[in-house]
Length: 207
Image (cartoon, rainbow, N blue to C red; front, side):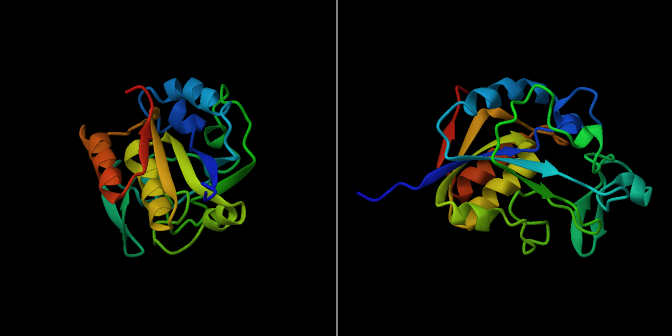
């Protein structure tokens, strides 16, 4: 019988700016997924990885950098870019993992460090070619399945899932451990449909 391969738990951006009500880019009810993630960390995953937005000041995705309206879309080096409030600035409180998150990960992947390029996905920056190194690390560990949780459904979760599928991993999503930004009310639901259409391997959770 073929070895099913190892399973990695990816904790995507469970950070203060997203998951704490005081955060600059708070995702509604984001803090409610933290206890679910903590329970999942007690399962028998082969490796757990924290994915961390880690932006320099004046990052190109910040509305303040361009004096642009929040949630407007500009061209950033040939790539459509949503204008966000300043968030997850390197070495700031907002970039830190939520205080109630159990710190049981094996290693950290930081993304969004290039001021001229955003990075929603844990695997690739938004040019779809600059790797964060996550694929190589997981393959070297023998990982074949990734189990994805975190924030936010319609951005970093969606693009992480799509890139994981593209790179040949089987992907399981836990619906109890994700929340959406919902700039438009249907964005979260549409993201789930897009992930399913791309070949999501499975959905976990009680929803």
